[in-house]
Length: 438
Ligand code: XUL
Ligand code: CO
Image (cartoon, rainbow, N blue to C red; front, side, top):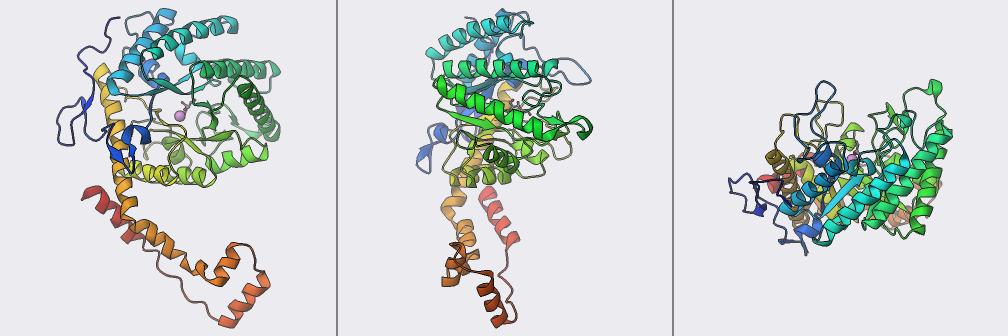
C-alpha cells in the first residue's frame, strides 16, 4: 500500500538538545523510570476523531486540512484510507493504542442496519491491520451527540424511539470494542444535560441514563467485555448544564445507581479546567475513590471558555498530572490525545509535530514527577502537616472512637487554641520550580 505520510520518517528519540523537529526530545520509550519503561508508564493513544476526521471546520469556516487521504470523503474507500493513514501514523510515532467513536470509523448511513454492516466491514479491516503490528484498541464509544435524533439527549431523551437507537449504538459499539480487544468503553454524555429546567425533568432523565448504563454493563459482561466502563466528566458544552459535571458528581451518580463497581473515570484535562478545577484535582478525586481509570490528554486555554482541545505543552501541568498518576500506581487505561491541531496548522507534518509535542510534554512530566517523588520533600511535608493525628487522641478520632462531648471537654480544658503550623505554600511551590528548572 502506498505511503501516505511521505517524507515523514519513523520518529526517534534524539535527546533534549536535538533541533530535529521530527524527533523526540524526552520520550525515550525504553528508558526506565521508577522501575518501569516510559512506554509502560505512558500508554499513548491516538484519537481517531481529531486526528483522522477533523479537518479544521469551525463555526466560521470550512476545512483547512486535507484529511481525504486520497479517497472521496463519505465513502467506505475513505474509511479504509483513514485506517491506512492511522496505522502508518501510529507506527511512525510508536503509538500503541487508538480510541474511536462508531461514526469516526465509517460514514453513518440513513438506516442503522447499513451503518452496522459498514462497521463490521471496517472493523474486519482494522483487525487485519492490527495483526501485523502491536497496536491495540484503548477504548471505544458510541457517538450519541452528533445525529439530530439526539438533540434532546440520548439516555436523557424524551423519546422512547431515540432511547432505543442509543441502546442499539451502545450495543454495537460494545461488540466492536470487544472485537478489537479494547481495554475500556467510554460514556461521554455530550447531550446528557439540559438548557432550561422549564422543559426538563432532571430526576427522570438521570434515572434513564443510569438504566442505559446498567444495560450496557449487563450486555458488555455477557459478551466477554472484562475491561472498565468509564464516565468522562465535563461540566458544559454542548449543553449548558451537563449531568457529569466533574469527577465528584459522576462518582456520586455511579454510587447512587449501583454502577460504581464497573465504572471508573476518564479524566480530560480541558474538562477539568472548564469545571473550575485543576486537572490534578480531578485526578486526585478519582484516585482517592479508587476510580482513576484513563486520561484524555489535552489542554485548554484559560482565556477561552470552551473546550479548545489543544495538544498539551504545559510541563507544569503534565508534571502535576504524572505526580498523581505515579502516586495512584498508574492507570488501568492510557493517555488518549483528545486534541486537535490549531486550524492554521494544516499539514501532515503538523499532525506529527502535535503528537511529538504531546508525547514529549508527558515524558518530561513523568521524569520531573518521578524526581519529585524520589526527592520526597513534598511527601514528607504532607506527612508532617497531619502529625498531630498520630497522638493517642488523634488515632481515636481517625478510627471514629471519640464523642463530641469528649473533644469539647478537652478544648474547654485548654481554654485557648494554639495556631496550627504554617502551610508553607510558597516554599513548596519553589520545590516544583527547582525540579522543573534545575
Ligand atoms: C468531548 C470529548 C469527547 C470524548 C469522547 O469534549 O472529550 O471527544 O472524549 O466522546
Ligand atoms: Co475527551
